[in-house]
Image 1 (spheres, rainbow over the protein chains, first blue to last red):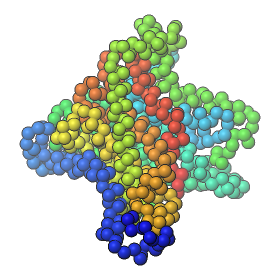
Image 2: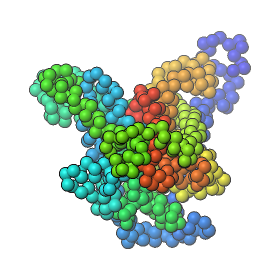
Image 3: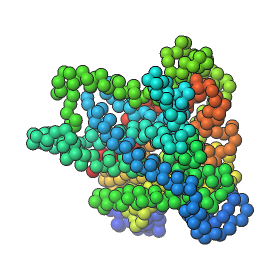
Image 4: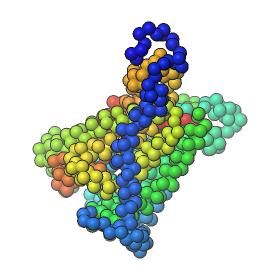
Length: 311
Length: 283
């Protein structure tokens, strides 16, 4: 700015002389300067580790010492590992049952989308399970399920029903954990739908009502299409949440009994931390990553379409 | 409005709704109510098997002082603060810069960079776990606060950049053009034009990140070994082993762990929800 002393205020940019390389190219250089620190950190701690993990999955490594290249043998071993299959199937259970969260979330949002006294507080109270740590959620649900002194056992006792030890039961443990996970996830989806319902076009609804549409038909034909954006985000965060499930498994069952409630995320951790099978653990992580990529790419494609529409 | 306003319904339906509202709320919050009630339950109640009935006495103060006295929970809380606050500041700083870089300039490849930030944020933690652990070992920051803090800054920068970039892209671009025509440098545009305008976004991100990082369990589990450095989420699993039959103390500990993000949420609700529902109301 040194050459501004005699210049008029509204000097057109194009007549400026003595421009440096920097000032001529600042619209190219500045974004790079702005983005560089974030990109450097992100590359170091996120992008590069992904590539390293994938390459580790072709090796055998105990965490220290030399890595031995073993080609696809970790992946071949996965196929014959029953725990891997149990974990994969459990992840599918998580994925499918977690889709109840957007459904319940929508129902709760519809239930709460009123203007009565105190409704704002009720909405926040419905939402707040999402703010609580999953570790706490896991601890509470584990108490509820306890067959000796849990809440559910206590409630059912007078009716002569013996509550099964859900988390110690190979057939039920996973479902017990999923129910715990659905609690905060439903809260999350509810808030997305409440926000979506806020911006639903009231005139369209009135018009449809005048045409005689109501209840279920009105919801499906008029309201849901306008909630598309909320549904999309609810689906993405729910799917990612289901595949990421780790905390609840770690605190409620540690994958047990006999690995019956294991999921890929926890089985990977188990292999790496307790059995020092870094290569094998990386292969599990890579499989999980590939499954998630389906959803990541779906999300990015949609974003790309929106971007092209926007500018 | 959908569904139809309850005020238009019959008086009976209105009454039903007004009853259903608190009843459903109590059922929905039963797990939290259970924690609070158990945190105040006395040891003698537990010994007599009164786990869920009406407590014969309230023992909040005894239980809380007992948890603080007999465990390292105070230390765990402090560790959570030490990890969470710098992580938020770092992530907000980096992402404001990067978000401005991606929103204010048109250059080839900017969507690719944005996509990289977003995609990286969705990956399973396990694909990062072994190399990140190794990286912190190589940098000599394994089993220190810095290992977790630097990782959180880097990882959360992905989501925050996405958020900031969308927010800045929605600002009136004429402001930037006017400043450029005046010959204001790009740095000054960022500091004097953009930053004051993105304050709401920074507030939303800060509260959101606070809960994400405070509640994170996985990364301290991987990157921290010493009990003295553990944050509260990890500390709770220690307490779980320590108070194996003292549910009231474990409940008190859980309540203490849950309280800071819950208070943050209620204090900054509007910002929190604005951050979380980003894009939910757009077509």
